[in-house]
Length: 259
Image (cartoon, rainbow, N blue to C red; front, side, top):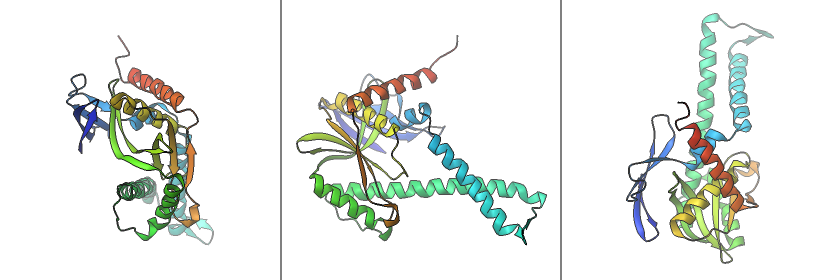
């Protein structure tokens, strides 16, 4: 997808693509310092250098659950499990596929949730599927409570240091410029603050405007999963410094290391 963005009174075209390794990158046209370069995304940088034990635990648990379910439903009889040798590969491959199905299901849910909230932020009236009605209701309550004024939604930003990304919302609350990230994950993780730090650095360099606060909104997935959770980054300035440290490590790992 191509997007034109304004950078200090000049317009630059940003194209979001996926590189051969499956990572998201951004191509910049119109900025003489970066034209033709492929910039890693903020999320790619953090996924590379930040340890995510929760993700590893999920992958392991998801695979084991799939294996157990297959064995119990197909090969358990009178308390005895008998698995033909020629079935083993099928069980293992099927468990890997199940993990990918769960990931894609979660990804699709997050994509739809973001699209709905983007349209609502722009004053549009999209059809709300039943499974998203509780999410939208919780979000609307938060909007009324804070009085947020939406300025930009789903915008691209880049930093001449060599990274780019796509933020969810930039707006203002009580006269202060704020950065909002929507998440549909099971928890709120420390790297989300670093992600906001990266967007802050890029947006401020592009516009000359200062972002005062950053919030992460963990969106509910149905009534059974509770209500909207909102956390504020304690020190957004430090989060920006932390992200840049991660970016420098990423650049080292992807640069020429050995003679």
